[in-house]
Image 1 (cartoon, rainbow, N blue to C red):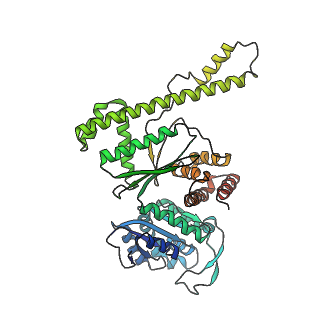
Image 2 (cartoon, rainbow, N blue to C red):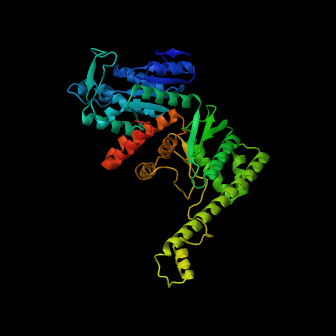
Length: 442
């Protein structure tokens, strides 16, 4: 392990900014990860150096902890002297935040700061009367400006309530970084087409290995409520590079559905041997057809079940003199024939967001989550359709999810709720926040 504050190591390293607690540094040392420690309590010139450090090729991840003073530095606002004292910092801040956003990052901010509540803390190292307790206060306009700046720069902070929680969140983040986790999804067991979704992800991994010559290892685990699918790379494939590959895979799936010869030619054009390309296309064409048939069958079963349920319910509502055949015709008109093609079938779509990749399967059925969790999923679809957040809901709802993952899911969801507070009704915000806290025993 090499620790430095002078410059980046030759190998991949982690930039630790204001987050050098002993538990975090101990984990870095235990994992033999190189790291560089930097402080934001410094002159603007040092912020430029920090930005350059994160822009260096070896910078693999960034771990940041922001306090109230840092938000004042970022915005040059909050106190009578902040505008003068931090003007140069505010000028450099956009570059600093863009550099953070460009790398896998975890930006930690105390939840009380995010929600506008004052709290007692120790004075930061280097400040006058350090070590003494004093009350943290942050002007509302400074908070608003700081979070607008973070959002505009592509940085979504994660909020914590206790130092131990921040250290645990950092541990999960570092574990993902060290293992080169590039994909992680939770597929509920009772989601319609759950197994088909998992097989589609296997096709995606096969495509990455065969056509892109990437080393990708599939892992994960099952619980009584679902399964987690994880992909790990050898370092050449990163989460940021995954978007182009998902688009390429989507194009390949489209070709498999329409023109097998064109699929072979497409693989040959990226350097795949002709015979290997032919075998690969035939194997995956059969797999895709099998998935499409199973999608149609699942759709037909679901429509048939809906028709039967509706017909049973209508027995007591429709005049007894109406013939059963006529009632059945009404139901078929409402729900369509079970043998017809589904309105929305699995197209092999892989949707990528900033944190992970998820497979979509339609039609979609939500089961296995209590009403509040289900309502939160629906809210996410309307307010912020980030599938990474939906995975967090499933992680948090499953008591068999490892504790570290459940804690990270809770923090991620609370961070969403805080930054979306103005878009949610007050009662919805309280209900969802209480549900998240209840899942982890708060």
